Each structure stands twice: as C-alpha cells, then as structure tokens.
Image 1 (tube, one colour):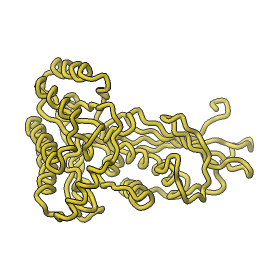
Image 2: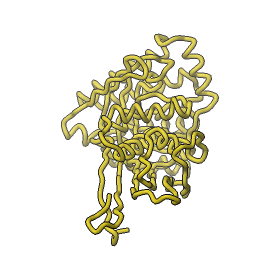
Image 3: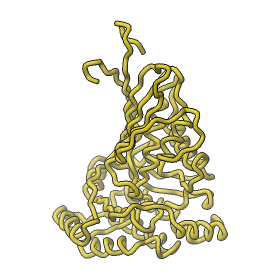
Image 4: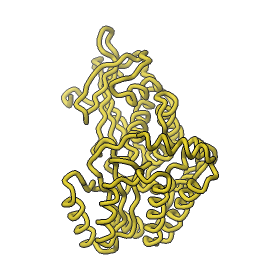
Length: 357
C-alpha cells in the first residue's frame, strides 16, 4: 500500500446498499415460519459505508468507528468479544476481521431515520460487510454477503431477524424471494419494461410515522403464538399468498392488483395482532383512502412507529395533495423521497492522494 515515493498511501473503500419497502409476505421468512415467500422493493436513499485504510503503525489506534448519524466516533479492539455502543457495527467488524497490517476508520451514514422499518439495519450490515470484504483476497457473492449480515444479527447478537431484508439490500431491484427452508432462500429478480418500472416508482410513497420502531412484547407474543400454531397455520398462509400476487401484478403492470395485494397483506398483519397496525398507521391509511390511493403496506413487522408504503393513483396532482394532507395531519409524519434501486450492494476502491486528505 506504499506509493512510488515510498510514503504511506491511503485508500478509500466505499459501499452503498439500498433499503427495502413493501415487503409483502414478511413474517414468513423467519425461523418459526420455516418456509415462505416475500415480495419486496429496493429503494434509495442508500446506506453508505466508507472505510479509510492505512498501514498500521504500532502504538496507534487500529480500528475506529464513526457512526455519523449519532455523532459518535470511537476506537475498538479487533479482539473484543462484547459489543455495547453500536453492537451491529462492532459485531460485523469482528465477524469479518481486519488484517493486522492495516488500520481502518469506518464511517457509516444513512439518510433514512433510525427505526424506519425499512430494513435499514440489514442495509448497514450488508454495506459494511461488503466493504470489509475488500480488505482480504477473494470476494464474497451477494448471497454470501446477505447471509453473513443475517448471521451477525441472529447468531452473534441473538436478535429476531428474517432473511428478506438482507437479500433485498444485497441484490437490489424488485424481488420475489422463496424461503425454501429457513434461512435458505432463492431470489428471483422481477424484470419489467421501463414504463412499468417508471410508473411504479412514480406511484410509490414512503411515509415515516415519526417514531422509531423497535421490537416489542407484541412481537414476542405473536412469535410465540405462531410457533405454537405451526408453519402451515392460516395466518402465515394468508401472508405467503400476497407475495405471489404482488409478483404477478408487477409483471402485468396491474397496479390495482398490486394495491389489493398490499392491502390484503396489511389486513393479514392485523390478524397476527391488532397492535401491529398502529393508530398512526391507521390514520395515514385513512388519509390515503380519502385521496384516492389504491394500496398501503405497513413496512416490516408492524407495530408502533416505523413507516408505510403507499401506492398512489394514476394522478400526480392527487399524489402531491396526499403528501400535503399527510404531513399536515401530524408534524411528525414525513414523506421520504425514494427512487427504485436497480442495483443492490455496490463496492469500489479509490486511492486518495495526499493533497486530497
């Protein structure tokens, strides 16, 4: 890593990964469902990870984490076995390892609010693992990156996590994901003509409800009930069916059918537990109905906080009026501008000259 003049060179590794919306069939990509099907859509704003790489100088800090959204910058040990300040970041670095000859500073940034229920933590893990993969010979496949990100959350941090968020972030695009036997899954990208892609992008809204989403006793209660009922129970089957309906609707460019699938999924989420569709979500759904929207999906597992995906009508003025009405209803409600992300994880390296530091 030395330049021609013999001085120490600096390299930047940058990676970006999209978040996920409209996860119809979610809850069926879990250990208690055992098998399932999920339709989801990768969108920007992306999570960005940037790693500044230098040769390690003995006596100096070797691994620094800069969690930019939190204004938090601190050093960690490569050998530490306990994680506290930002466990996901620290565990992912421990999982991947850093060659002893190198020193790194890892900066992580997301333009999406924390706890938005859009798979942001999965996107962080995917982007970070993809970037760290550049520090050693060989490259992981997108599937391997997704499974490693999932293992960090489930095996190392002992969290509840399905597999669809990580796969969507790694692959990007619009996907139909078949979970054959948890966590093993087959990703089938949905390719459509540009006019369908553009129209879908124009119609979609991501509405943040202004409160951080986190797992709760409601989720634990639902998981316990579903585990007792078994993977073939009707409540899980109702969710599985919406994934294929969504896939077929997008292939056909049938947005009314996609909206019905989204609504069926949200209703099925409510049958898991009524509190999974919060009062804020119900209020936004009612406003969406009044302004001609044709579909709404509570993102992620549901519950307090988080966000909704809304599928608007064909009218652009009606869409803009809907945004105004939602944001006027509560100062916490926020439209987050999104674009469909054709690509998933992207990683590249670039040498930094001294005058650019």
